[in-house]
Image (tube, rainbow, N blue to C red; front, top):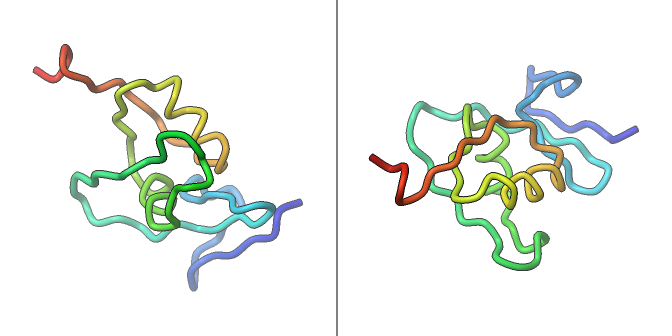
Length: 92
């Protein structure tokens, strides 16, 4: 069972705005409504930053170039977010 770490007053159990680092589940801070651009690693999934994980975990939706590739990253860190494909030919 993962250890749980959350922000004051925020339950992690069952909270879908969280991510995993090893066996520790960490609650993500709520985000202000905005568009957030998040850099993700090209090769080694461990090269992602904590701020990127927190932002992805708290986002309402993750728009990505290839949902299959992004899903690998999200699953690796226990992030359960809806994804949608967004690339040049559907940007209009």
